[in-house]
Length: 122
Image 1 (cartoon, helix red, strand yellow):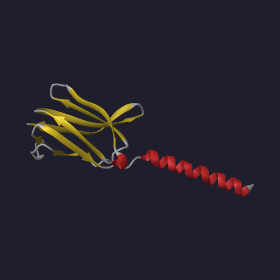
Image 2 (tube, one colour; image 1 turned 45 degrees about the vertical axis):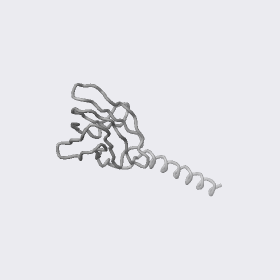
Image 3 (cartoon, rainbow, N blue to C red; image 1 turned 120 degrees about the vertical axis):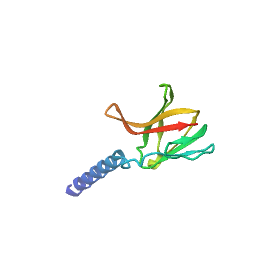
Image 4 (cartoon, helix red, strand yellow; image 1 turned 180 degrees about the vertical axis):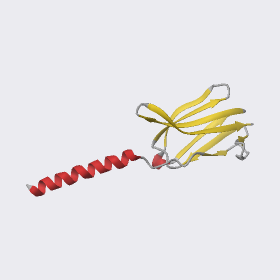
């Protein structure tokens, strides 16, 4: 009976550690970088030409949220994304203007911003 109790205790501890590891997340996000897919290279002013912009980063939580807002307050994107193995990778189609891209996660019912990135599209 003692061995059965020890085996059961070991099983419960193993399950508890597995759940903790799954919920712990991958660590601190790297911060997003971006590539201008329709020519142009990011420079210190965060400039791209009109078109598609690809964003990538590592160590992101499995579920994260992106809000892309232009300078007039128009929300161009307000979407939940998935980062398999912590790798964020998504593309936005952007037109001339000044944007703010925010990446956030939901914690205890509140959105917590992980990164806010200014972007200028020419």
